[in-house]
Amino acid sequence: MSFPVATAAEVVSAIQREGLLNAGLPPVSAALQNHSGELARFRSLESEKATGDLYPDAQFAKYRDMSGLLARIPTVYQNPFVYAWLEDFWAHHSAAVYRQADQPPPRFLMASAATGQFNANAISGSDQSAILIEDGLIFFAHRAAYIVSPLLFRRIDGNRFVATGLPEDLGPSSPLYLASLEVAQLVLDYLLEGAVPGVPPIARTEADDFSIRHVIFTSLMSFVFEHELHHLREAREAGQEISIRKKVAQERFDALWRFVEKAFEGESRVEFDQVRMERLFHAHSEEHFADLRALLSVIHIGRESGTLVPAIDGALLFFFLADALNHAHRTIADPEAYRAMDGMNDVGLVLNGLVLEESHPYAHMRLKSLLENQEAFSPSLLNLLAQEAGKLKGFFDTVKEILTKAIEEHEFQIGDLHPKWCFDARRLLGLDPA
Ligand SMILES: [Zn+2]
Image (cartoon, rainbow, N blue to C red; front, side):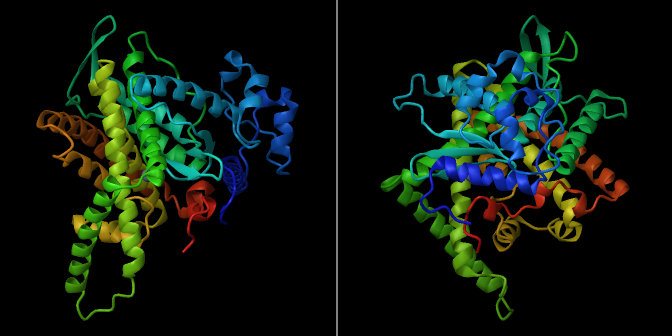
C-alpha cells in the first residue's frame, strides 16, 4: 500500500482501519452505545466483535463533552478517549517546550492506531503532517511509570521527594521484586492482549507520590513526541546541518562495509545487500539523532520546571520498556534467533539490525549511543544519565528474568501474541515494502 498523494487524515484513517481489522477489531465500549454515530462507525467495519468493551473502565466521558469530542476527532476510526488524552497531553507539552521558544509549536494531526510498534510514527500527508501513536503505548507506559516511580523516589515531606538508589532487598516479598512482577505482567498483557487492562489507578495509597509518577510518565510521552517531531522537521530540513549528519553517517557506513568485506572475505555474502543496508544505516542514524533531540527537549522541560531527574527517568524508561517488550516478543516468537544475539558485540548488533531490516536500532543500542554522547552532554549530565540508567537497568534485568521464566513455563508461542505484533507494519504504514 502506498499513499503518494493522500492527505494526512486519509493516510491515518487507512492505517487505523487496517490496524483494527488486523487486530480483529477492538470491541466497542458500553459507554459508546449512547453515541450512535460512533457505534455506527465501528459497526461499519462489519465485525461481529463490535459490541464488547473498549476500555471498559474509561472515565473520560465523565469530564468530556462527547459530542464536542466526536466533532474534533480526525478520522472515523480514531478512538475518541485516546484522542481526548492526546489533546490534553499536547496542550501541556507544547506549553512547556514552545512557550519561550522562538519557533511556534508545530502543527500536525494527532492520532492513534494498532500499529504494533512501540513508538509513534511521523507521517507526511499532502496537506499536513501527522503523528500516529501505537494505541496501547499510552496506558502501558502510564502503568509502568506508576509502578517504577516509588523505587526511584522517596517522599521526604509534603510534596518533596528525593531520588534514591534501588532498594537492596530482592526477596520474594520485597517492593522491588513485586514491582518487577507487576511490570513483567504488563509486558505480557501488552504482547498477548494488545493492551494493558483498564485504566490505571490514580494512586493506591495516600503516600503515593502522584506528582513524581506523573512527571515520569509525561516525560516518557514527551520523549516519544519530540522524537517524531524530529522526523517531521528532518523531512523539511535542508542545508548544511543535514548534509554534515549525512556525511558522518556515510563515513561510518563505509567503515562498517569495509569491515564486512574483510570479515566475510571469500564467504557468501548473500544476506548483505550493500545498497539496502546503506539506506537503512542512514535511517538508523537519524533514529539516533531523533533520540538525542528528544532527550534534549525533555531535559529542557525538566530544568525549566525543576524536575530534571524524574524527567530524565521518564525518557530513559522508554528505552527500558522497549527493550523488555523486545526481549519478551523475541523469546516468544523466535527464541533461537534471539539467543544467537547473546554474544554479539556492538558491530554484530548493528549488522544484525541491518540484515534483519529492523525499523530502528535495538533499544539498548539507542540508549548506549545517548549515554556515550560526549559532544551533546556535559560530564555532569552524562554522570546523571548513567546513574539513572543504571538504576533502571538493575530493575529491568529482574523484569526480563521473570519474563523469560514465565514464557518458558507457560510455553507461549508466536500464535499467542496479539495480532498487532505480527503485523507487517511497513505495509500498514505504507512504507517501502521491499
Ligand atoms: Zn524514529
